[in-house]
Length: 442
Image (cartoon, rainbow, N blue to C red; front, side, top):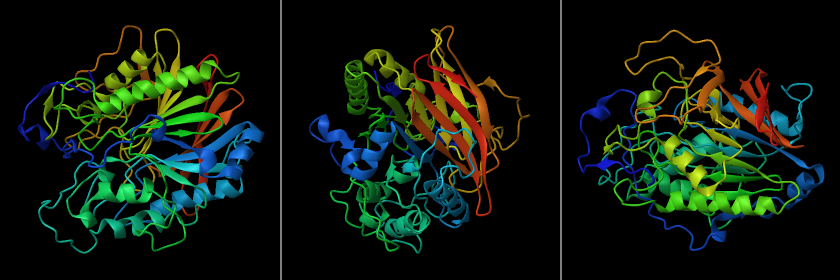
């Protein structure tokens, strides 16, 4: 069933002119997926064997999450965020709550939009014609990676994994202009040799197996999805019939993890990462969460959240936490199922791209009154929650840059959101998920 809707070949019905709707058209990934299920997996022990052993001995693991760090002009906000995360590698107590479970961070999991083309906003990127091979000053994607990723992150001396955001998925037949090709160069490389895009330091390229993939660690499985570049996020070709390959892969991965966990005395947590948020409290989410809007023009396409919930039901396995970015702010939402299971859904998109977005700004540029937390999430057109299910916003920060730190161990997931500048690091939100009862506390 995937993202299918009523499809037309027209590329613009006028709906794409709505200010806050993504202008990206669903784009086929030219690199074919791996041939076997195992080939989609990367084992953390093969990335950092010493830290893998440390995590096993400790029985817990801490890592960072951030997205939307790229900015073509102003690298200072991302620099402040990286400075804060780096401080926690040295001292887990930096900026944190006094009773935090956190240990030294093992890695950063980047939630997409590593780079932005000059002039790009969160919603609009005015691409040059793909048939034009001319690269204007400042538009070479390799240079963007050096300036917006390797430069700002040079002090973060831990592994960096990533999923691609919509700005990382722009494609072109001309290699220097293809963000998608450069994402593969830097994160899905065939070796850990220094990337040709890195003229800053000795950080090697990451060897993730594909643009959607699975990371296995001692305490958690990370399922990273690619939601392409169309408004609202789409997993598979919306013009094809039947469930697409990424959707089928997701169901298969969830089933496989469920089977493996059933044989363990201590089950591993499941972290689901996708750049586009499946849920949000933003005033624009009725439009920004609707894949039926925009130039891809898939009329009646189901929102990403509906596709994911179908995969959870079909596999018989829900994730323990969903993490995303895309919106340049922080949100913590709770999806509560009728059976009482609580699923935290984080948006960690305030990683450095200026400005931080207002949660209550509407598509026409006006601002709605702010709401006191908790409040109900905004549902995109076509999404109806099952009876007795609910989704609410429990925390947000829409005026400061920052990052998320998660610690998994002792039967729970502990989460913290930190605001960060070059001068300060402050813990602004804390939550804990009991992995047995699957209830949240703060």
